[in-house]
Length: 174
Image 1 (cartoon, rainbow, N blue to C red):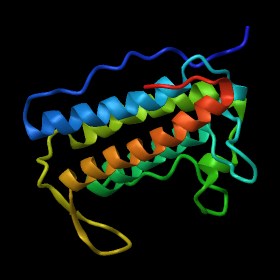
Image 2 (cartoon, helix red, strand yellow; image 1 turned 180 degrees about the vertical axis):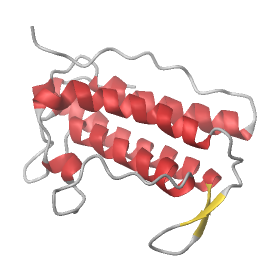
Image 3 (cartoon, rainbow, N blue to C red; image 1 turned 45 degrees about the horizontal axis):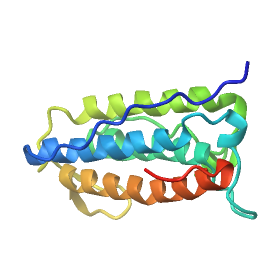
């Protein structure tokens, strides 16, 4: 039997609530939208690139967003000393797209969902005004900024996922 990405239930974003409730709701909607774009596809299909020479794939997007979540919420905001999950052995980034394997698809999707919970837990007790210093730029940033950035990051990549999914099997829509 061939593995296929499971169906996902998306909950509508909240229409009323506190700023944190709205930000959490929108981020969760975008998070699950990425998995919705993967639902019903095999590992091989998740590894199909958009068009040569691009290495953009749905599984690459899943892996990329796992590391993006980890980097912003856990490493930068919460200060956890953790490494990227998808790096080349020489430390370069980009392995989330370069080193994909259909046999790892189920584990990669599970890791993303697990990372969501780790990220939620890492910032649960922090106020949106909590600040940190970005390690490269030296800029002071807030958790509020990270939420908005992550919503933007998912929105952009979900647009890529729309096009990838349409190319793979013709599926379009939300």
